[in-house]
Image 1: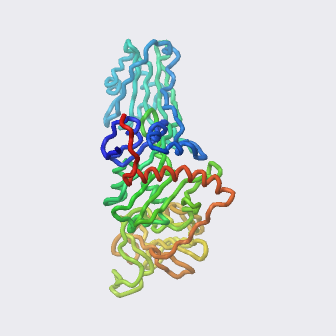
Image 2: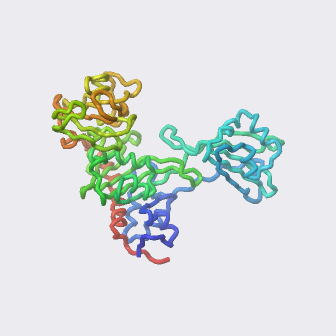
Image 3: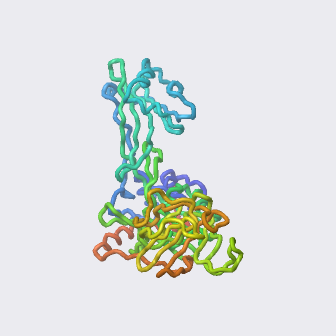
Length: 456
């Protein structure tokens, strides 16, 4: 039977780390693990329309070929590795790696092609390969484990090798990082970040989750203990190490008993967006909040003014947050006003379609370069929380206006974005079909409905 503790089958443990409610798919192991489930073979049939392919066997990254002068060695080199510590020197690193190559330290200090090794970042790694006689085969400094590069994720390192003449050569090398697809699930106990941390989900993925469903769920006030999520997302690795995160591919979030879904889809293989499983766009609608995480300090309606002490109508919602907290546009629009506006202090007003506008007041400062007439995108940084104007503490005053009349942004039905064209639906449904099956698998695991596993 499936148990919440450790699983004895190694391939399944790679797939389901049940004690942390986290499931990993990498290097084709999912083909083995999913084969343990009755009827799960169908999950490998439908492939997503763009790389990476989730259930296609992938080769692990091999180490770069050794230098020509040592390729004839009959035995593999001995590879050692050390992590750079604060205050480390090159001499200390070479000593820990047991590298005693005459002239190497002087070469590293003088050769212009090896200069990157003198920028020793704590936490990065240095590797050395030695042959059976203790001679250097290669030295590698992994100075850039992972970085985005024109739509791909690459790892960069400095490689130093003997030149066969008593000297050395240094080259900067790079390799596209390996792509892995991970699936995870958990439920809310006290907070969203607590639940995602417990499932080993990177913070960058958690923030994507709030961005993607921000037009459907107010993650500051709507979350409840017992809410659940199931998620499929990308990570990148180099030589077996995680070096970065990609995008969320599919997501289901159960909030107050209602399911909200999202799937990444690109009709042309380049420019994509998030849609619900029925094809409705999740981007372009209005976000419920202009701040990532905060708390509501004052709602829409009548209240006693904190400065003047009189009862007045409050035309927006106040979000208490530390000074300098980033403020993001809740929808695509154009800057209609940027400046000081009486009791609002530093204020930005964005003009949207269909007579809708949004106001962001009491800012400490505006984002550099933003001016009246500029177009902004949903989620774009426009300013920072402050306490300017008639304010008793740092917070954002946010208003949602229709034909210049303020309405309650917490209760108004936000405009719905357009759906996919008919010509795009066939490809979209093919994408959704696969991810829906994986979400259902996570649901079975989360609700304790996993089939029995054969003991091995």
